Image (cartoon, rainbow, N blue to C red; front, side, top):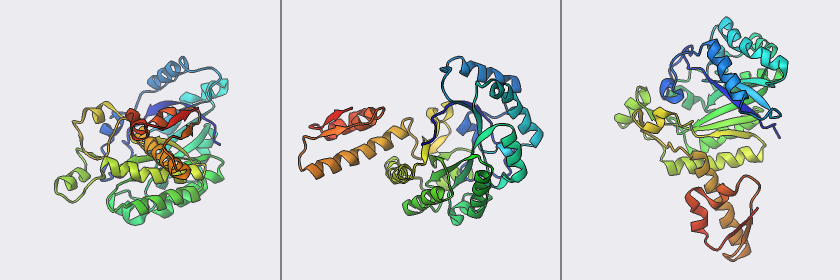
Length: 317
């Protein structure tokens, strides 16, 4: 299984991204609209290190989705800011997210020389029709090629996906998950599509041309995806978007399956299914459910949903 890392996040808005996807208003999603200064990055690293156990595995993560779209000298300024921490052993690696069509051998060799150990690609879907309708500007073949190059350079691969994009279905989402496994990803993230103001998807929503997933549908889709990834030892790093102030406030979020505890809803639903299956298997309601460490909250359920649904069940660590 992959090593568990404490991540020091540096958010990089997609100022260099050459495309405007139908769902994208990066300021609202990331809560940031300008590149951070180098001294801000150093201060952020120092502040986080001061609160982390000295023996924990740590990475600096450049989030935002288009790191390698930045000019190489700009990339290097940020990567170089982390080098002293790598040399001192206070940080074990760097991870970043980028587009699959901004990956090649030269880029990857530079990243590896700078201590990058994980590259996450915003695949979003592995269906060419969905990619085209979403304005992604790349194809499934681009994702497959970039994934192969990343693995050839000895860098861990993450492939991020979205559900509920225009043209998406539950079956297509599961096929995307299966291809993420086939492309050799070690990590993934699953993001439900949200309708955010200032996007073309928002216009389609207002005109009745796009209907987002309900929260219940998104949870149901993600159950199958999570099972697929878990069965194939692909670590799900995140379920649902990070709840920034703009998303939580609701001012810019028009519609879609947003919930501050989306992951907990999905894992609650998975545990509901497991408990129901055990009850059916044993033929009685008074069963004892064995719960692995760290999963008791999910087994009991968000808002004690599973405890309420199965009042005669005993939960045992």
